[in-house]
Image 1 (cartoon, one colour):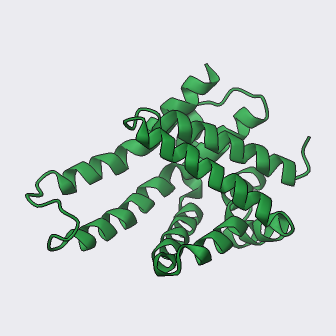
Image 2 (image 1 turned 90 degrees about the vertical axis):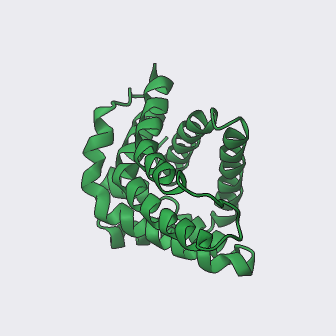
Length: 193
């Protein structure tokens, strides 16, 4: 039952972004990569997707922490996490900018910075911190653990990719699994047993 609730939360959190993407790309006559306006639409979708993802990111983090602590995640937490929207939006946009800037540099800046910030969403939700305090906490807590975190985050990226390869059916279970796994890493680095 716990995993079913987490999968349902991932589906609900993804619906607005998926609907937006379908609405924008539905009328395209030339969806080829090098067609006129393709990159602009893709960048606009990425920004809009980040905004929509930020709406539910706090709720997903809260549910993952509940599951990682052995409690039943509640679907109602998905909506309650919206109070973290401004901070989660800032994190989403930082991640998006890092990703875009890192493309010509083979994603090295993204990997270096995001590894230090990966636990900030959990600190925001769990410790009710400000964005600045959560980013500082994540950066300092991950010091000395960055290579381990990098390996872990790379493994979660592979799991997410395999979910997409499975005709997107595995995307939601993969997202639930990786969010709970990241919550376990947060708990360990936070000193919880």
